[in-house]
Length: 497
Image (cartoon, rainbow, N blue to C red; front, side):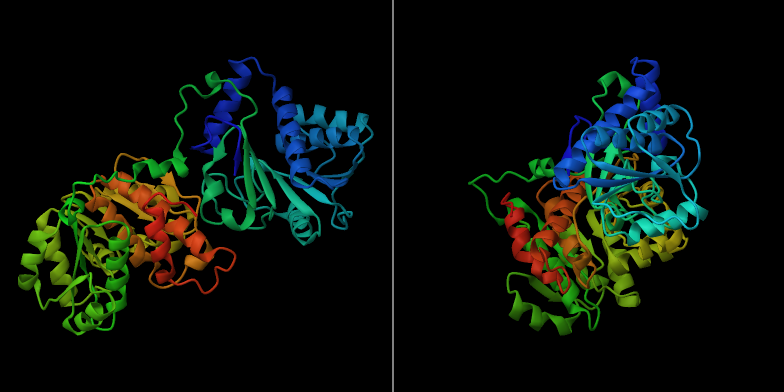
């Protein structure tokens, strides 16, 4: 992502961006047409940088400011000797966009009004200026037809502000949606550009803050923030005069009959990310295999909560859930863990058991649900969670008094105070068995080394997702959870790549 702003790590809602726009016009003396000119110039510059051989472009222009940005871009392209075709939704534009349209025509541009029979001409690049953040409903009618034809076009696609049809706040699409190769966001990042459906439709993302002064942002606190490479500063520093007890003792609870792999993945991830000691409390049938495959894990066969008590007493962090099951054995172990008040990571079946008997966490805790588990914790359906992932993760954090990681495309991390961080890394290859178990171990290791829940969750999510990207590289299909382990060791030591 290319970024041109000191606000590059901040994520805004559509309404917040509108407020910043108004502040720039009303309090900073920047005319609306000047903002449009800056947006068009930034977009034309991005187009030429991205596709330097392009000479013919097609504009798709809506009635409002997004269409005005497209028309101004078209005027700049005409002045630079490009061939420009424009297809508009309506015979007229509104507000400042009408002036931009008139200037495009004065520069020699011609505008066709879209109809059912409208075909998009050949072009190197198509510019999506249909709706931007101004759409709060599914695209219908002629506009839907244009989106379908744009998506079938052979030219590259530049989306202005965000792909038309993508919700700026939630990152979801409820109808036709433009699939862009490059999305240039104006003023500030829209929070929906980094989660849910966004990764499927945004392509490369760039930001232009349009040279707005800091005054335009005053009094508008970003809704969330985007994780970036600076998160690595949280990696705990290691002194030389230390021993294994200096880096915490993680206890992994899980591995019901037939699910021994889950606890191994979580335990090994904790070791690879720096925990000094890792114990595993599991079914007896898994102990021999764990000792043979990973002898550094201190595996114990545990029959009930009474047998678990000595291990709970020695642990500094408890990672509960991988392969735990939802039967009496797992239920008893989890109940015993909850009574300790110790720092916990709660995942998988531990979350499902928590959903059956909801209670706020009594100690420092990180919950790591996927959307299905989140739906059970909130007593709703998965569609409701995915429709507004930001609202869902905030509600989970508040309800359970814990830091919560809502996993998925664009994982979100929230704390009970309402802070939200968004992870820009990860890939579809990570949608495979065991990835969540590895994340549990990563976060547990960071907690054991002294990070608080908010920092451990954010750094853990970042390390895990980046490890997936490195391990998957250009071949994510077939990526397995164990592939992340050697990469995680390097990343946890600050070795990038």
